[in-house]
Length: 256
Length: 255
Ligand SMILES: Nc1ncnc2c1ncn2[C@@H]1O[C@H](COP(=O)(O)OP(=O)(O)OP(=O)(O)O)[C@@H](O)[C@H]1O
Ligand SMILES: [Mg+2]
Image 1 (spheres, rainbow over the protein chains, first blue to last red):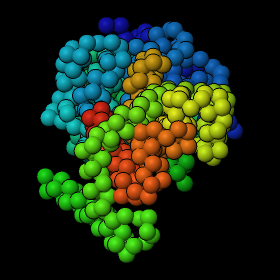
Image 2: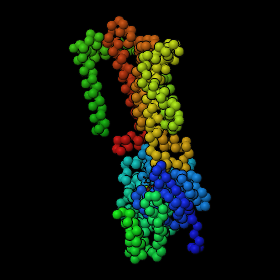
Image 3: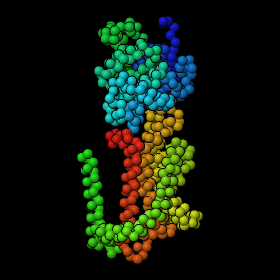
Image 4: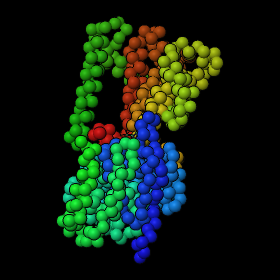
């Protein structure tokens, strides 16, 4: 494998975004190397969701451009799947229909898409809840339905907006390990928004730290040493601990 | 199961209470023109046995069913369009707001002048009563569809048609059905109003004829029968909704 030249799955170039008078993103540029996981870390309201939605093609940027596999983005595409911060589940649809919905919209036959959905429902630990409705699930379970929906369309780029925010700590740790497995085994690119410094350092190939509004990238941190280590020993690795401290040091000024 | 029984028992209690109050009011009497419940029930029985009730409904149901079907179909379609399209909203919504607030009795002579005294005018009256609330409810519900669900549909490559059929309509359905229920009730009122104000036919004929000969029990029997029919129909509509959109009902209760 060639590790010196890494292609970018997603490239964001000089993007500006205003909501009326609110300037959300100012001249933001960031590369997302193919097959890697990039975390976006930054204070609440700094524009992480906005950036993800621009990449997804759900929001137009005011200026600048976004390239996915070298092609400029003009709208949503089959190469990208989104995990929504607010889950965005259809309350009138059962778990299996919600998870299979992406495939349903692509015209995949019912039996086929439900087979795929069942696989991912099991993967996120919701086996047995296929026919439950969202209001019958807990917050964390709903979030996992949204996760399974994004996984089941098999897109190259996964845009995950705080995908583990509502799950319990045990599940969260298991998902973080699963995510590391996914990054390693499937050649997918992950864009991962989180508020947890530990989580970002634990799962990421690179961590982009965003400034408060109007948002730009202030720093990119690339954990080096522990990426190939056993998942259990990462949390005790000195580099991991150092990076967590370092990121906290640069973020704490915005909290105070 | 237990709660289901309880619902039936409570509904029965409510009916007994209402009919009891009617009976007592009739016995006091509130007015010499107000018969007791049992007198009306007897009159109802006579009207059923001599077949005049069935003949009357054969007439009354014509404008009612046609009007309600037209209002339901076009009401939802127009409402959907208004909800999806700002310009159309500004163009068309005022018509329905005016329709909803217009004094219908004053409009009936105009309708008769334009369409005569036949079925057409009666269908119009039913539509004028039923359609506005269906249109306005549908439009409001469509406009209030969760932005994040629509975004989800787009992100997973739904076409505009997919998003309307699979996201907007199901999410609007509880409010659309609420509008349908109100619209249908108004349609029943419209059907009787048309028969009283345009030409006495059907149930309206029983009402006005029995009033003219001071046969008040028959008059109230006819009025009560239309109310009972309306209630039965509304229940049917509720079943249909429950059948079509299983998850929705429960969400409304819990969320
Ligand atoms: N539709 C909108 N209209 C107006 N302003 C908006 C809209 N969406 C977001 N904003 C503003 O843009 C800024 C960035 O919002 P965004 O949702 O991207 O933040 P975020 O980084 O995802 O925050 P969080 O971590 O809390 O999810 C916020 O200040 C918000 O007020
Ligand atoms: Mg956000």
